[in-house]
Amino acid sequence: MDFVFECNAYNELDHHTPVAAELLKLGNSVTFLLGSDRSLADDPRIEYLQNWPAFRTLYLRDLLTPNGRRIFRLLSRLFFGRVLRNKSNSFRLGGLVKFSAALRIFRHHQALDIDCAVSGWGDPSSVLMTSALARQRPIVALPHGYPCLKNFDYNSHIKSIISKTGKPPDFSLRNEFDAYVIATQRNRKMLVAWSMSESTLKVWGNARFSPQWVETLRSILPPVRIQLKDDSIQKVLVLLPATTSGFRKGALDSLIYRLAELNIFLILKPHTRDAAESALASEWHMRQNNVYIATNEHTTKLIEYVDTVLNFATGTAIEALLLGKRLVFCRYLTDNQLSWDDCAGIQIAHSEDAVIEVVEDRSWQSDATEASSYLAQEIFADATVRNPPRRYADELVEIASGGKR
Image (cartoon, rainbow, N blue to C red; front, side, top):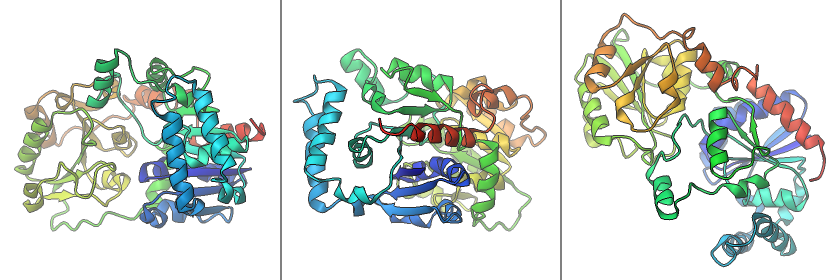
């Protein structure tokens, strides 16, 4: 079977690689269509997948002429703009597909063998998805992140939608996918509230953070490039959120200042969605001898490198449990309700002083055994999936084997 993945950004590459690897192991062909960021082609994950002759990369931009790109944008605005907003999702998406095909926008895509087209989360209105639909091929959306939020109004954008309309976001267009894959029942509950169909949503566990893939990832990623004179000093990693996330920035700044005063080496990892050194990394941070902004380091290797991980807004910290690191959930830094509230075996700090205290206390360790029920829920779909990457691959093969839509 031939699978074509849309990888517009790092997050999609990160989450789709373990699934692609399993598909290749099963004897399938995989193509990654990369976005405009040319650095993606040099990512170690791509190098790993190139061990299989049936893997290749292409660029999305090379499959559209400049005129085709402009026409597709105009058609997208027409069918998903205000003029047709009262029409059904199937009418609008179908219109985009039919007009794009009639205008031969997809002609360069015809050289692609597609049994199933795969994208990250979002609407099925990209060029690859509509091209696959024009050929009556199944389309599937896989996770491009790991949301650990429990409340539905977790940032200012969503709150503004609810305030203006009195309703949550409308994700019903995403029901046009043959499968919209999520990791947990918690994710399902949120998306159903946002007008997605139970039948479209598939809970297959968390491929990216499965222990099987994390071990592989550790072996293919390069080591961190940090030189310390005294390697015995405690290394503390703070996983910074996207600047659009809901958190208390002033309290975070205060915590970082306090941490920098301790006898530790402090590493700040900006979120992958933020540019360059991140809006959270000021000139002050850059001047501190014991503070390192790890923009270009891989999070998995950073967690492997450090002793303690501080987290308050991201699911990525689950790797700290898998790798036996000390994990602190800084509860007071966010008003959102997170899955971490339910995790045993870690330290949950309700104030800045509490964070400082647990960081300085070197006597405790996180307990992955106590956190086993949390890991079963977050990675293994409530213990219903033994090997998430393989489950994803098996399900995708079954969908692709069904033939045309």
